[in-house]
Length: 327
Image: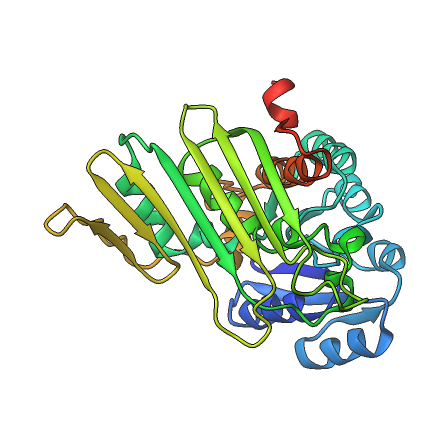
């Protein structure tokens, strides 16, 4: 067992800072290197959390002994980061979406399998107590339909607003809800999507659709849908998930579960759960993979669904997911 897990970061922006703050509270971790294309940002993070600052991740991997690497870069910026880390036997935490190219994701998937390293992807919602309680409640029950929504505003990052750089809201943000549907209901085999650019069409820097809807066919026979919007720029919105069962409706949010009608058996609390960072560090320190709930393979499968939705919206026709036809 490792006494200290030596951590490196590629990308030190907002989501990386979130992870760094959590990791600082885990005694078994040591930040040894941080890399960002913005030198000042890498240096600022190094001053706050420790480690050496770099602007070139290749040099960082060559010069610093790292046990595990957090990859927290924008979707189109993955390049060969994961491949180089895997070749060195460095364990990987990759933020979602794992990339914008399924071909690249499959290449990385093969490389990490061959290297035998531990991997985790940033689908944090799987680790929430409400998710684990829902998983336990749904076990053995027939889900007829799952319906998700994530409606909100427009993130400030310039790259997020460009379809070619973020993949759109379903790929970059509402991927969390799609992943939950896979985790709680099962594999998705077919997707039919429609997108529109309506309320933000007058904003030249925004090329992502401001409303998106996708319907799903699950392998087990269930059906589902997700709606998402970034049009509510003045606030408001919602984020939830409903499951229709036999004579019952399970309503899910990240904070609570509720079953109707009144008097129906309610989900049992599961108590505290490991955060995604606690789970990853424990796995790396002990070599036990079981705390990790969403490895790289799972992240690729969720990406497959959301990219299939993008293709369906472009063609106007339903599309089969890659894994439904290649397994």
